[in-house]
Image (cartoon, rainbow, N blue to C red; front, top):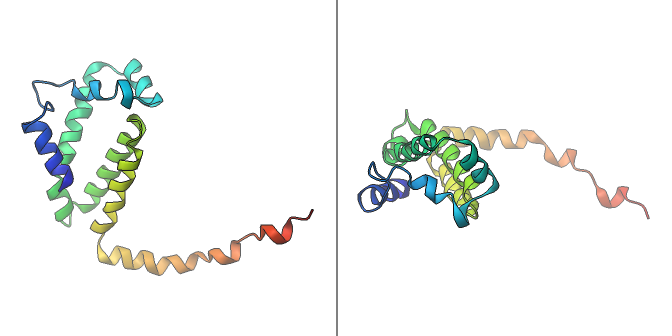
Length: 139
């Protein structure tokens, strides 16, 4: 719901609409710019930023449908993870926001998937592959 309400505010009360198609291009400049965003600003044509802006809107506005319909959940989770990774890589210090948002995707995973994952974890046998650094390091 956070994605949907954020996007609704961006479109109806902000400048993320057709009358201001360069808003994402302006957001990644200045204090938010990372090295990757700087590279993208130099190399990508301006219309690509418009495509990315509308791609953001295309994810956030139908987010309630993506996460409440069984057939669309995996699309929503994959799209959301890619969306938040792109935010983390292009906007300085928003990595923490992105990690927090991605951590909520586990809540949307189907119960049978979580059960299979829980059953699979003990098979890793991580304790046998542990290297005892204290016993092997001699003065």
